[in-house]
Length: 160
Image (cartoon, rainbow, N blue to C red):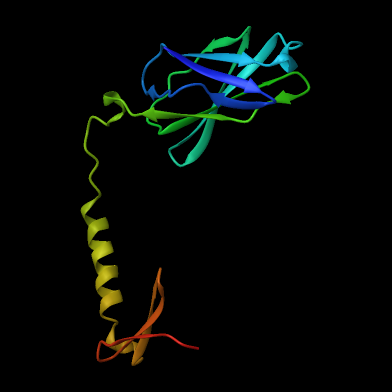
């Protein structure tokens, strides 16, 4: 399967509507370069993505206008760009990725029971402050703003 990318004025763009199904090894990136790239026989395609909480990339060196893509797994999108020489580079072209059936772990992950208990204890403490705090009021910080709850359980907007 081909992922077609045009490179004009160092801007890489996907041609058409392409998407990648993760876990497959038959994808080829096919580039159409403008004349600016004629002097560069050797080029490097960079496949960059966010996985497991960090950015990763795979570089593939090629000559001509196409290269085999690395097998991609468990990602939502890949950014594809090219660089060559000292130094010519492109913007990334973004290709959406669909997770494949083998991206799903064989075992269902379950949080340890004590983690659930810890979270529930934190929620209970936030909703019912300990009496030893001695405070008649305490703050609840939310996305909407700061609120104060009184000892009677009334919520009022916090003002300074």
